[in-house]
Length: 232
Image (cartoon, rainbow, N blue to C red; front, side, top):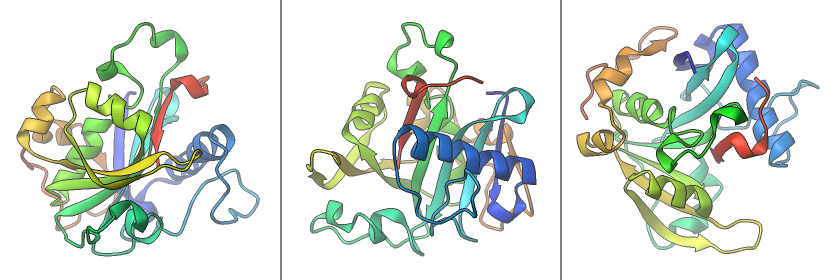
């Protein structure tokens, strides 16, 4: 990972936008077997109804500006995955609707398998990108994020000292095994990740006009399935 890019869909350079769609297709459709939500016009790209004007994409780029990770941030003041697709996970809890709560989805990151070694949870695929995704969310005014995670990813993040709070109940169907979780975007969270939000944002290249809600001083290759950390 040599660069972190962020921006709205229409503001991302064409090569990054094309690479992002292809990377998501490779991870979520080809490897994980998801059905395409929308026809991409014959292109090997993965997009859905939540990739809209209000969506902020965080993209990890490697050598040659090849996409090697991604995250999608959605404000809970509009449509988002947890509320509109997985409301059963909330149980009796009302869906968040706040400019200070954003949803993190379509999160995935890859590293070449030889670099994996005997890595600990903090060094697992995705953990290098995860703090940047949180920092971008914090810069947009978020004080917490919500998301739908598999139980295996939930365990991975807990081993990395991320304080996930479970919301509602587990979807215990054999091929689901997912839960809704939230993460507080506090300085303590970033310290546990060995960073702070302000320093992380200095390394993020924002494409397009910087939205009024962005606060840059906010507190606080060949790949295979085994080298990918992802959740919805």
